[in-house]
Amino acid sequence: VQLQASGGGSVQPGGSLTLSCVASGSIFSIHHMGWYRQVPGKQRELVASITSNVGTDYADSVKGRFTISRDNAKNAVYLQMNSLKPEDTAVYYCYAVMRPTDWSNWADYWGQGTLVTVSS
Image (cartoon, rainbow, N blue to C red; front, side, top):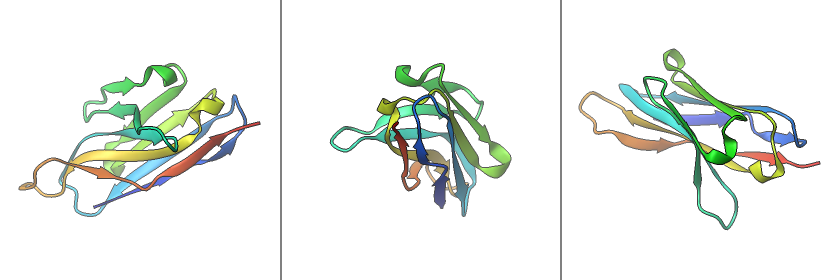
């Protein structure tokens, strides 16, 4: 099972970016998916998550600016980031809680990080 993240880059304050993450390989079921971010020297923090029933949760710092969505047919999760601020600069990691087979336990899977830089 692999999670492939994409969409990071550099943007000016106030700009927008969309991150994408696609799960591939042996996938029986995906429960929830989401995004964490990490700044060097700080703990990884949850940015947003979305359940299989499309219930969402956001960090207070991104509410009203970021929108998480998923496409179950594509095993994908997206993060639309608007009104970006310099403090949003971080490496963003996607994750998914999945069962690779119907006899597997639920487990966390992580994608590689994608760097988002917000700077003028």
